[in-house]
Length: 138
Image (cartoon, rainbow, N blue to C red; front, side, top):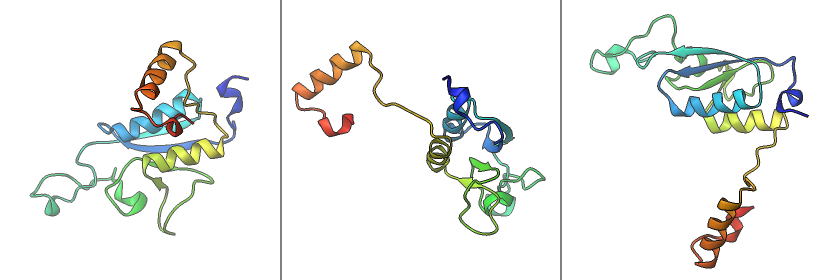
């Protein structure tokens, strides 16, 4: 089956992220790669920053990530079944937590080994030179 066939078609998320954040890109890549449906809400760099707290910079307008978890923190995943930390939270923060949740919920297979002979050659070389720990290859 293809990756898209493995996804629960009834589940759709709202994904909140900054326009400049590599951590949000990590989550978006995972969802895009496996065909997980989501609506993307993009926030600007200063969104949620209170001007009084940052020397007059930032803004606290209508599109404010603080309403999601109480912090100026993104990415955040929102949707049915997404775990939250505090009762007032609207979604789950932290990109690796989000990725772990999605991998578990959708039973995704994210293999570490590529099967590429050139990578295997580098691994063998590093193992022979005792530069790499064989336990890290599992």
